[in-house]
Image (tube, rainbow, N blue to C red):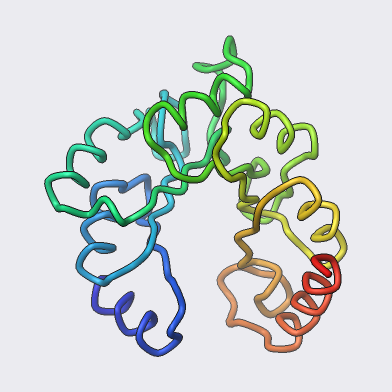
Length: 192
């Protein structure tokens, strides 16, 4: 994975990030350090959730110690706040702003708002709640389309987009250049 990440970084000349599923924060940091990646995304950074993979404990403490040991403090952590693909029963007594504060307290660099699953949009209420709960930049991590990017960029600092850019909007398909052009035209218009 580090070899592929390095090849993408060199070929694109862009900042790249790493996400190792399922919730491989330590592994993602190792890949990022080896490949010169700028950030990692961790879907369940703090607290515990019941996910498709079973009970998932937030790896923030272990991951931050590992990042320090690697001398990789330059690798930023993008952390989902109210995780997708998970049940929130364990954290149901905590508000979304409290969960956002947890992400910041445990040294995340960016807070991510998502929908319930890949391709689902985060609600404007959730985006606002995350922003109210922490001083971190807020990025939207799913469900961004040309139709909603303007509204989203009015509330958030950035977006992570994949599914919409794929053929037929299906995340495992190849990237569709026309969908990329359509999305970027609308995103650029919204930012102007």
